[in-house]
Amino acid sequence: MSYKKPLKEWQNDYENDSSIISELIRNLSFAGIGLIWIFKNSEPSGKLLPQALVCPILLIVVALSFDLLQYIWRIGVNYFTYRKYEKLLNEGKIDEKHIDDIQINPLFMIVTWALFVFKIALVLSAYLLISKFLITKI
Image 1 (cartoon, rainbow, N blue to C red):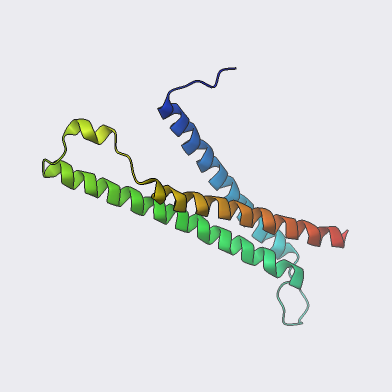
Image 2: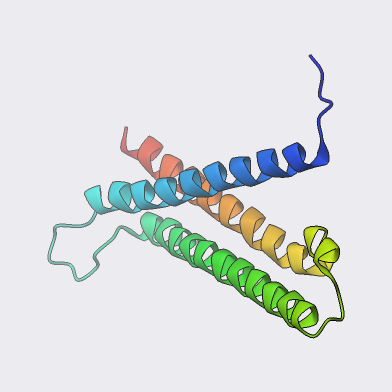
């Protein structure tokens, strides 16, 4: 099996795979909320959730927030990069051949990667805590 392919294909594979992972994490987050809701307290004790499920629900909410922040960040970076180069093109400071090979500062991608990794870690941590809770119920 050969892993040789053009750079653009590697980028397309990365974008497709990361999109699938983000979608899975989002679905797992919502499924986790549903799972936790099944175990909500029906007693009039005043607490909606057992104490063991408070941390997992908070982790899931933070993970979903990171998911949203990741896409807001990426939209902002893409928008401002587009506007910057559109302005340079319109002012004649660059020509058409330069707009096919635009590269952004790699530091911008560090934020995207950090949010991506954190949301995965948060959901996995939440599921570990949910599993621990379920094991005590068996």
